Length: 420
Ligand code: AMP
Ligand code: MG
Image (cartoon, rainbow, N blue to C red; front, side):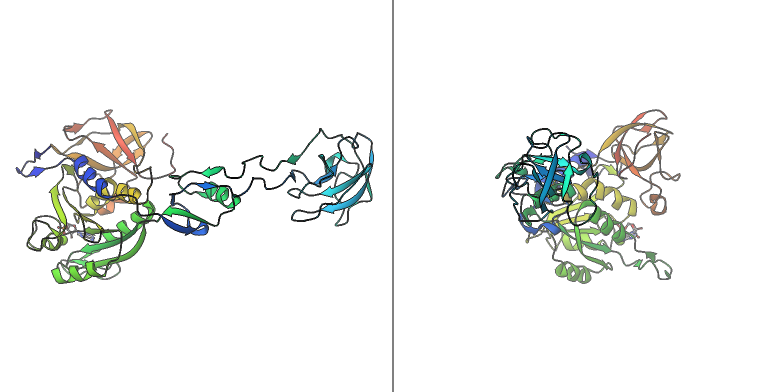
């Protein structure tokens, strides 16, 4: 579908641009990763237990390994052995005898129940050396407090499936299954390139016409949050040779450029990368029916690198990242959760919306209703106000105005927060 904007330019819908990107963002080829480096990766081959879990019958309590038939209430048992956790010993014992045992230690062959130390006359352990004898104060049920071999999983059981995201619990399960490496999709390697002759480092004194460079900070941090590894961050002036050199130096799965993607006379990204330009680059530039973030470029370089060409305005960068780059990073990483969660909330005030374009508005949620983060409206240059925003309201293209109380679709960007 193609729409005409106010100026008569052809626009493509937001979804069409995103679909084009996601069609090119296949999960990266799986490879082996040390388990210690696998946090937050997506497993590509299922992991099975190398042995039964637990590996051997072991005690669930600190106490005494007994023959249940012997260990009636009031029975006095002679202690003939001691099995701390990690011990390879299997002390044999007979009638009227028992062995001291600690949690996790292998249950002796002659035992069929564990009596916790609390169920003996002494009540506690008094030292490193076991007592000579104990009196049972509460008889154990048969097989009491023995964790059986294979109770949790038989040998060869799949404990973590392909497609699983490796968090702390999955890593523990894989380690217990006997593996110190996994086959997983690697984290996407990302590079960031800011373009603009007006950009200076944030700590310096800008001369007339210069501004602090902020997009690369936003993008590098957002890429890391999305699960990418940022391998290079560069800033180049509006100079084709400088941009070409920076692109040459990049070795990454995706490159996120900002600025120079519109219709300016010095729009360097377009000059170097546009398929339609004299340079015959790999990037197709489109007007996307959204606000902010209308000028967008996307393409795939010869070596497979995904090239995102975002407009330069900082709010446009923030919005474009959430709409297009983040889902692609997740797709490259093999993650099923490509999208942020959404909620529907009432508007706490009214605001105007751009005709014919999806409005993606930085907002805050206050007392359960949603309001724009900036009093100044939805200007794409409002970078200082961006700091107050927590989420993005997404208003359909055919909405001209949001009235107080209207229900609004909100993409939750700020994490771990309850909506009152
Ligand atoms: P452009 O898309 O290059 O026309 O830039 C649009 C606006 O965004 C201009 O006001 C630029 O100065 C500003 N801008 C572009 N790149 C950056 C950046 N990296 N940091 C901060 N502002 C930028
Ligand atoms: Mg520029």
